[in-house]
Length: 234
Image (cartoon, rainbow, N blue to C red; front, side, top):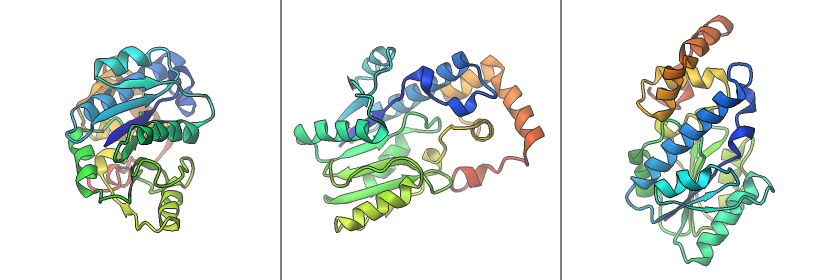
């Protein structure tokens, strides 16, 4: 199984965090989250190769530090980037691909191993939804091009439907450690409440962002419901 990790240009990522983070802070957070994801994938037994699809200038050094390879993102959007990675894996006779977003700060090797263990023999599709069961935070496909990719809004249901259209009964696998992606200040508050040790959390606390974000979310919204955002028990 290959891991395919599409990573957006750091300085363009996480625009919705602009009200609480400066451009430099958003860049630092994206780098930390990508590092957490790549290190966890590198520690996962059963992942044969890690392919990062990105045009971020800093990504080569980061990817190579964990033994990952990099191919350029052609700038045609997320689905095109993922399709490029899947095509490269298929041409190299990979059995399947595990597509993982780079903004999953709670990702750990045991969660990725759980996907591999649950994923069936080809043809097979496994979707790991976000906490809202709207997006697809991880997607396993065997063979690599088993379905067309539909990342974006409502991608979870779109990927399930795409599998069934190909005659594949998909598996929807809820994993709290992979349910949280970071898009807004509330998501950062959930990450901090999860009491996870990782580069992303360390950055948030050391920079003072953590205390500021928590104050903002407490003033602007109801208390954060960690279990709901993580798709299960905290």
